[in-house]
Image (cartoon, rainbow, N blue to C red; front, top):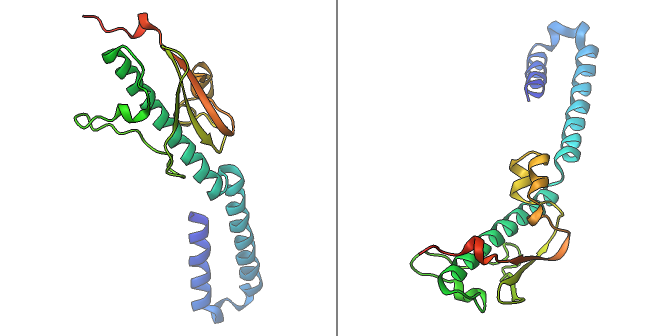
Length: 173
């Protein structure tokens, strides 16, 4: 940014006082052309390093999807702790007092899929566009995220299978 601002300022000064810098005209034009090429290279390399806006948008949607599924999973565990059964569907998780309403897919606006497998086992499914792991990968170093692989996913429709451990999640009375 400093380089680009400097080039613009130098060009502005040169343009104001061209007659004083006639002998430098070729050098200034070469410098400006070089700065333009360098600016374009920096912008293009930025797309390669960061990714295109479309790829970033898809990644952002997947981060949101995984975060939504994590919240839904927490509510399912809480529901099971209170009622000692899994909810029949995601609508059973709605709670006007706590304000929880199961989120929908941020892109398609369709509800996430929820399926009961057994009394203690369920799965949450979403259509994911990237193979990123979501928030853990964004915030933590790779070695940390490798230890928490239960939210890693593939591209496409992906289901996260979960099994409740009654000893771990029981409420002590």
